[in-house]
Image 1: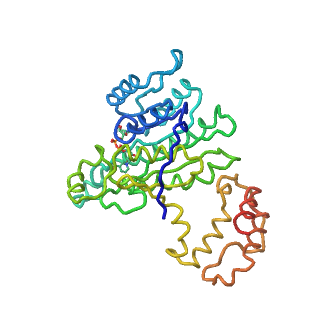
Image 2: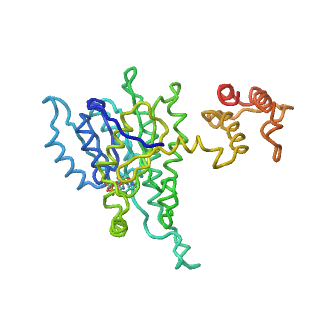
Length: 358
Ligand SMILES: NC(=O)c1ccc[n+]([C@@H]2O[C@H](COP(=O)([O-])OP(=O)(O)OC[C@H]3O[C@@H](n4cnc5c(N)ncnc54)[C@H](O)[C@@H]3O)[C@@H](O)[C@H]2O)c1
């Protein structure tokens, strides 16, 4: 099975610098406290200035700096993750204070606002542009955090120094969530963002960072007020913020984890990415799974999508699988692809071919 049991060594976060968005309340706040308990320095960014300042005071009282002239163990800055310069200013503060950042956690998130697909909408009311704040905070905010983290995490990095990004998705990142239309799209987007980055960002020749997601199910915070009573009444499992924070800390500190998604229910965590890959031929079918593998191998880390446009030389050798060709007849496809690529696209691609298709 895919159960993930966090194993956190007491020193694994000692003196690490961790930037956490959405750290003023709920799961984020629990993670802030846990990281401080493990000896890290923490930079909190959150829209909620009141809770942020309150948590800051509590934490500063409980976790004073080890030496008098050291910076405080925890700092806070009001931040709106949906505004790029605001996210940038948070990273600047962390970097200025601690001279480096080791891990970044994107936990800021909000739940559905209103009903985009209200059956009461009319030809008149549908003309008003709906709010996309949920998408802006949950998805665009995570994308801003990842982009800026990809640069800041590379700086002041010693040799063999592990650096990572952790994104907060949800069970809605992989399972139907009726009526949470925009929320679900945003949380699928977060898992998609992690999947698009996990090969690219982890390459030692690119950013050399790890990236993972956590996908909590119902967790005891303000976010679940609307379903709380029914959920508890039904005796369904519910996470405490601390349990989710423990899984997050485990993922942050485990240097072997990259590209994983941890579903968390009742305090237990289950990794979902590996089985999706391993069981693909069962849920998709053997033939399409094999063809898909050829295409994925060809695209490899996706360098081709970023390569500058070049005039393509004409090749007489066909590429790809013509529609309707049985897989048994695909012998030689790999050669065909290889020639076409070396004739036409970019050098970067030939690596992908050697690793993936052959
Ligand atoms: N509680 C759950 O059941 C649950 C389940 C699955 C996923 N999650 C995810 O976990 C994360 C934490 O959720 P939570 O339950 O602790 O919620 P919460 O509301 O307790 O905390 C979320 C924090 O994000 C902050 N925030 C909101 N908008 C922001 C913005 N624009 N910029 C910066 N900060 C902003 C809030 O002020 C708050 O402090 C979220 O991403 C949420 O989607 C929660």
